[in-house]
Length: 363
Ligand SMILES: [Zn+2]
Image 1 (cartoon, rainbow, N blue to C red):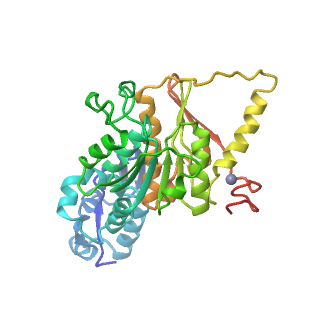
Image 2 (cartoon, rainbow, N blue to C red; image 1 turned 120 degrees about the horizontal axis):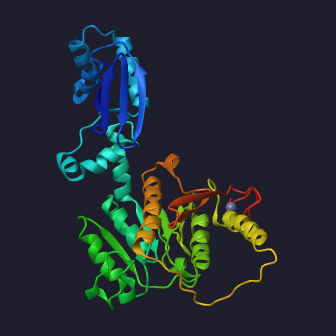
Image 3 (tube, rainbow, N blue to C red; image 1 turned 90 degrees about the vertical axis):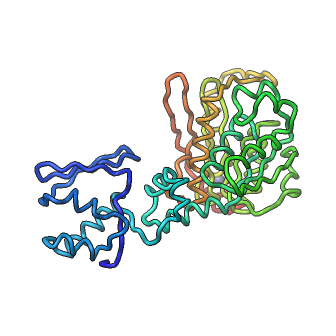
């Protein structure tokens, strides 16, 4: 360990008083205290500057026992206060993306882990089906976070009525194909972005025409219905073991947050369908079914961006390999804009599921 280099994370603040060290993790808004009888503890932690080795620090603080320092380092690594500096970030990387790096450091144990996570994002391939009120914002978030390979699927043109809730479309774009407009704007965010544009409908034979190796597919399409588009995508993804996100939508004043599905690891689309059917049947017992074709549900961009952001957060966790941090799986999540509450309804993976169960079609 004496040759190792560590750095106090940039988001950490420290206060020492009466043998108590207060540690604030600003990124996570968390705080914890430790009792430690060492007046120079703050100075010592700041000496982990990403340049000095542990041996150098032991040379400066001669009153510290090396085993005590090693224990302290291990403790602060576990608590996300220190990060191991096992490689230097390229200078342009730091100057252009220091806030992104700072964010990823909270989920990584070393600088090489940060670099490899960001590399995984940049080299992964994500397909977004439907670039409307959710799909446009999801695409933009992912490209700004470092995704370079994106496939956009939509056969619609931009309409004036899209502009109040869909991202990256402007008055001059009305009448142009959505995939063309969005693709051009995404390529202007960062260099090296490659967009595959598919101007086609999501029909049941869609993937026989556009079969490719995707790391993630996000469904943001609601035509002919969210249920239908979700099922087409989920079938293909379950068969090929591709993680997929059902990109959310609206239900009156509620925003439905899309479910994240990792094949054979989390509840699948069919687990959700069966579970929700049971609840809906109980809720609607004795209630006459209401029908209204082509119902248009109200929406505005603050709502669609919430659904899009939460889908994009899980998308980043999936493609960077941080599966343990995924938050929208095994749950049906609704954001209530009136009450500003997020309601989570747990849906477990069903061992009798026709798709992912023990004897399921895709197990
Ligand atoms: Zn299932």
